Length: 433
Image (cartoon, rainbow, N blue to C red; front, top):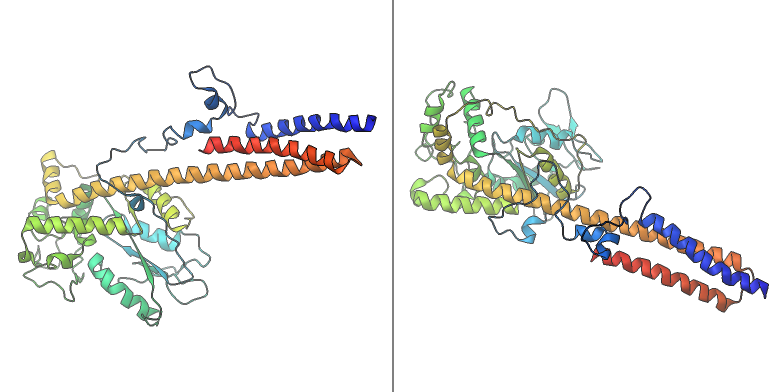
């Protein structure tokens, strides 16, 4: 009789111990998670702080606005960017390098700063690196610093999409039909005024890019379609006024032109349609191509660019990106009148950048929220795993303490424990939903 009585007393004591242990995991001593507050929130919110996160703004992020003024209608598919990049298979990352957008720095990150099973082999004194797949003599990256300018100097979207598949299959000595590759295009964009001024300073120092092919529909533009802005070898020392006055200057709206499908407007033949219609078609094409790219970053948001790239491709950089605002373009002092002139010459780029910036920031916000949800789910699963371990431990403890107890008494004790755990699990569901 005394032995049976002792077992009955042991059950509630064990339950109390279990609840105390569980409480320590749900509400740690150094946390305010379950502390009662004297504000106007209800009891559920006081006891379940995760309830707040369902209806509040996401965690404050450095140099990131709490709310983004939405001007464009982006779908969930536009915002959710994740690529199952198979570096061992036939996937290829293609970097579309637009002049003066920080592409050189980003290109170096791709070949020297990514954690890889087989890092790119970069020899001192050589411009190009060998970026092979693990165990294969095939390149997974098409860029200036890996394959060189294989499709022409600063090849645009029109050139790359027709050239890259041919070049990559030729390099890997494979048949296109039997080994179809997946090409993931990426690029960088920059504020149009800053980019324009940076290009002007670069040209002023002697850059020309005159060896660029500008291939479209199988041919380069004629001299009449794309007349030169200068005579001689280069445009060294060109004043900003002269740079702006050349109507065929490819610096004007460069980002839209390099991202659009030029075949839609007759390539460089300006007589195929009106200037207004041409601009409208190019802008719409550039927006669509940018939106459908696997990834794009913004020069003005280096850390967010790094974060989104890592989230998109599931790759990690070794060193953090650095935001450098003291550029040559930033040091150029211009009047408001000149700024308006530059914005007018780059009206399509200005609209594209506005579109790209909102899409970029909304992707960033969406990705951060998804990451927070993933972390909450992981913590809940870890907590539930600990609870299961404690439940199993307590069941074993009860069995050891019960000695030679009858089976139905043990089943009754386990049933009581399962009811307690079920209640704890249900509270977690309330937090989530």
